[in-house]
Length: 27
Image 1 (cartoon, rainbow, N blue to C red):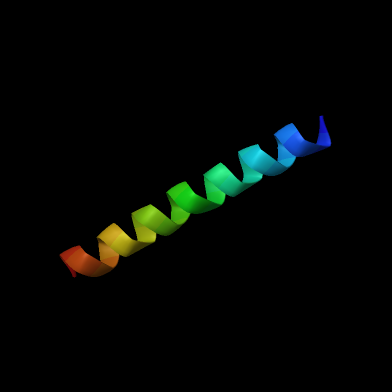
Image 2: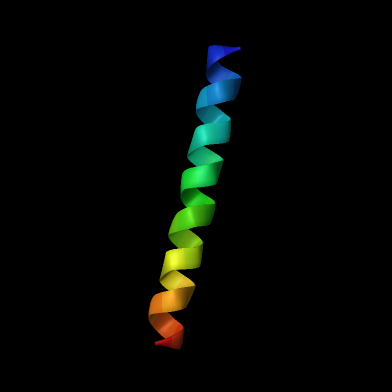
């Protein structure tokens, strides 16, 4: 359960990072 929660948080963080990276490129 803890590991699953950690993985989900990590994925969300990666997605957020990817979005920020895309925004930086478009600007």
